[in-house]
Image (cartoon, rainbow, N blue to C red; front, side, top):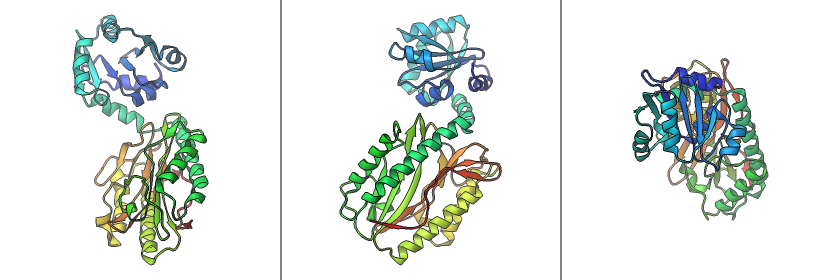
Length: 357
């Protein structure tokens, strides 16, 4: 087994002889191999990746730390492993199975007892929360692709252009630059729609005097980037400057609060209190950030009241915002690596308020 699998084996819940993992991201994390369908069976001394014939050759070549088993009937292969290792109790990854799938596994894993517990997911979460240098490198590459794509797309932003056309152009450039996909449905919204944190690009035409928000990211070799920038189109009003300045300062304070050993909730507090003291607290409704990695949203949650401490090597976002219904909104987001001294910012694009188009 590789080191990450050995650690997980040591963290199996008391009484469990093995764990069964099905979620694609967790299988990829532990084995380096990704497939739509597959199962990772981890005993305390041995690990197996079960795939069907579609993935057999690729899994044999790419998967690390596991013995690859190609199944024709999953139930027969699982039963054989239960018998081989005399498995009496198997803990199920809660996030990897829906209710019907869990019930089906009870039959497939018989005579072993199947226990549904959050312990497996919690153990995996603890391992994944600290990124290796390899993982940080992939996230940084995704970020550089995102920034280059945005830089190339910004000259196309002009009054009269549709939001959706800009979003499609941005997605095309992200993929052309080497990403396997975008991290999520890109948020490219303008004007009054910027007051909606997760607005959807539409046929809405960009107008002079609008703010335009880009919440964007790339997926590179399984790892995500996440970044938000807000720009003005044409003339900038005093109110727009005021709100933008508050958000920018709040984001700076949030970033300054980041370091290992600090509670995640304190990062949220640093940004939120500044926005509240400026008189806009009721217009900042979401958390200040989240973890980023194989999933676009993962631990830790940088949210109010979260007492879990940040760990060196964690990758998080810091993204406060102010959203004035019916008017406009501003959000600024960076992705950073937590360090003992503070953080390493993976985002290189400037955050000064500029007018484009």
